[in-house]
Length: 237
Image 1: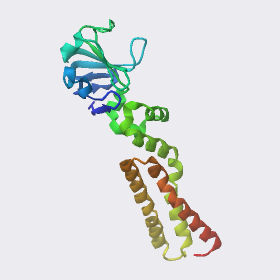
Image 2: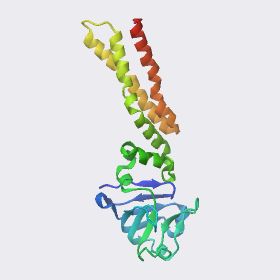
Image 3: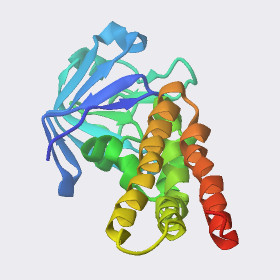
Image 4: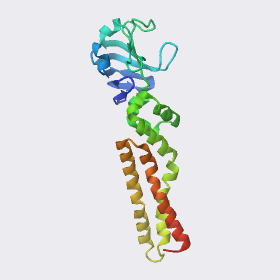
């Protein structure tokens, strides 16, 4: 499957590859572009393949790089730590006897699913996974999108009914008769502003970093629907 470049905000690197054998959780010709924190070994870590490993007693969750092609000098030096928190990110065989001479291990929460799904993971991921990711520094730059995804999905059943309630109330408030098809068209058009505003709230909330705007913005149409039903019951329209 195609690999989408993923960013680890905590480790300060980009993870990519030529392709991924998803069922085997294996990257073909993996590449890591690192920041200046690890620059003494160059800006790129490459290997013939990499396998995703869950956490165990030897290491945290991450990718095991096999047949490392660069930087080979790193394999003879000590493991590299994140200068921000002192956490080991790149494990070297020099001080980790569970690694072969041509292997290195990269600690990261970037799973095969994230490499394949990219940001679609925010849409289709489990609630438990998304909630855990919100507090994970790996996804620091995407926290707003994660919060929006979790909360909008939680209230999706209710918010998706708002345009329906608006359209039905408009239709029932109009006089019946020969113009019923015309009335149906008008009531359908009345729901369009809600759909457009929902998209606007979503994009604006992401752009300015305010998830509350994206989540709660569409709810401004609830009073409109309530007013239409109130008018309907009181026969004011």
